[in-house]
Image (cartoon, rainbow, N blue to C red; front, side, top):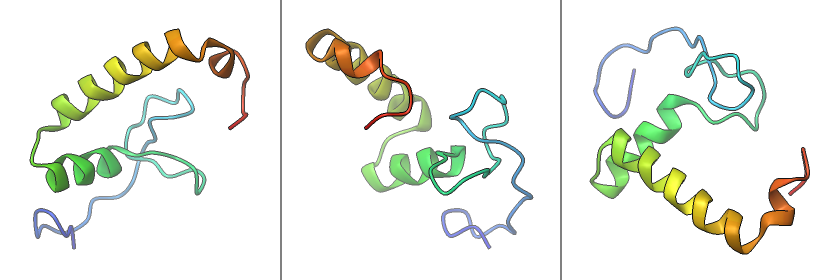
Length: 76
């Protein structure tokens, strides 16, 4: 049961991380799914579009301040 909508859970079919273009599929524990973004939006009282826009703007700003972090694949 979806805790946000009360509707039955749909089968997961994609993630937002690897490039598979399937926003609901969980492939690893580290994946970010549409449902994760939806939950964050709900908890912050904003839309999914607003969350995604904020992520983009934040990454753009952070990339300017910490560019070396963005050139390292798979590092934290």
